Structures are given as structure tokens and as C-alpha cells.
Length: 114
Length: 111
Image (tube, helix red, strand yellow):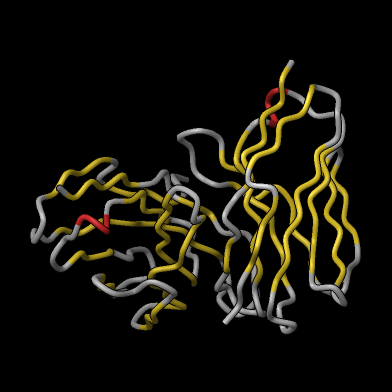
């Protein structure tokens, strides 16, 4: 099993550009989520999904869109990149949405917005 | 919403010493408290978790304690080793999978 796979690992954007961070899991997990990690601020939840076709906002959703058309994939779209979105992004999945348990993280995507 | 505070932000110990990291949470409905370890440049990985119906849980050299009345929980690492050096995050959940993380503790274990 590959677990949670994120692409790309590194990306540099100019202000105003759009892009999509890809996330795929092969564990048939119900729950998928996106976090951003900034120095001194821990991991903050951007968006999450409890199953195909269902998404909701986390703590810091502004400037990001998500969709969940299949159980396996949960892409994160940056609509118009801003320097404040420079961060490391982690996708994470878990088996159950209803009962909290281990989150499995991808390797992360480091995004720089100039 | 839930707020999780974590202290200290950095912790330096000598190999063989014990290390303690503390977290407080604000939402009394929180009932799941995991700890994640993140090595430099790597992804966070779960090392131990505790649910609100348990006061303490141990796994070899690591243990977690929970005080629901005071709304705080702690990670204890005994006989620290250089490979324990990493950033540790606590988190809390009110029963669903949404986790609120603390800001992290950088642990440095010197040989």
C-alpha cells in the first residue's frame, strides 16, 4: 500500500496564480482532510471530507476549494495564490469519520508564493 | 470552538532524562487526545492517544495522562534517546475526526 500520496512535493507560484494540490489514498478511508503547517502555529485544518460528495470547512478555509468525487481523491485548489498561503500542506486520512482515530498523513507539499 | 495550548515550545534534555510536555484544552466536550511526532522534514505520525474514559495510558517509554477536571493532558517520555528528538504535537477532538492541534514542542535530546 502507498498510503497517502501528495503531489507535487514542491511548488513555486506567483501571486494571483491558481493551482491544485493532489491527494490520493489507497486505504479506503472515509475521512480526508487538508492541513497547513506554519512555523509556531502547529497544524491548522483547512477543509475536510467525511465521504465522497461531502466536504466542509475547517479553521482556515479562505482562499481554498476542495471536492471529493471519489473515496480515494481529495484535491485542494488555490484560487488566486497570495504570499500568506506560503506554507507546508499536509493531506491526511482516517478510516472512520464518526469515531476519531489515527490520522495518516502524506509527505507534505511545500508551497512558496512570490 | 476548541483551543489547545501546548507548553513548552522547546525542551532540551540530556540522554536518559525524562521529558514532559503539557497541553490544555478549552472544550469540555473533547474526548479524544492524540500525540503526534514529527521528525525534521517528515510527516507527523501518531505515537500514542487517550480517550476521555481513561486517565493514563502507557506504551513502553511513553505515557499520556489526562485530567478532565482541569482540562489538561501530558506526554511523558522516560529514558530519552537522541532518536526522540523531534517536534511533538498534542491535539483534541470532540468526538468526530476533526482535530485541533497545539502549536508543537521541539524536543532536543543531547547525547
